[in-house]
Length: 293
Image (cartoon, rainbow, N blue to C red; front, side, top):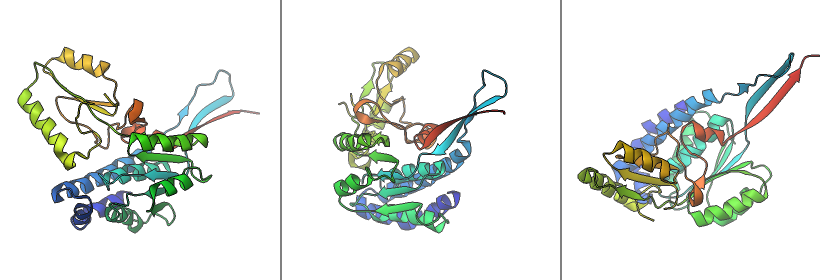
């Protein structure tokens, strides 16, 4: 994985124009997305070292009890077109770090950059069959992959309406699910805030990637992200506790770093695609207890 991250950095100048031509974001943003993707790979490569189990103290002598972490199994991942590298690399890196194989259904609108991302992993030595890439009609692929007995987990980033449909399919077959769904993030600017800073940051975030960012600040209470600006520590603490969202950023925009949790609540889904929380979605806990004879 570390070698794949280095290859992605080395190839960023070649991959960025492909991303820009297909998706439309400016070239510097495209290159920034690719380099951020390499950081995500680095993070989860290191997180693979920290998939610890635990020893549970027993109630009687001669017994030991363990909670052992095991890969959940093959993963089906579905990603959108707005961040062709970012959305694939989170799911892919987390699955590999947990020891899972993965089938990526990448966006048919922006096929080239995800293919180049996966080429970096192949060139870095990931065995054949561990990472798989498909394109095609989304409904046909999801209706085949999600119920398939080989697939044990599904991860989806996209609209709430489609996410609910896919979660229903997965639930019928008792498949583990991570859902990162639509967000219309509220932004509250209090009377005591630095209005100039707030307006500059909010406007920049709103128009980034032509507004096609799942955590763009808007005003309609889905539960993915939220923002607030205030100089009062009391107000900041109160709103952090009161707002029902998976993420809240106060006086700056500090979301989507590899090492922090990224996910929503309510109609914006469940599960995290960042931080140490993310890998838990790709692991099963097996309880092992043994008594001496």
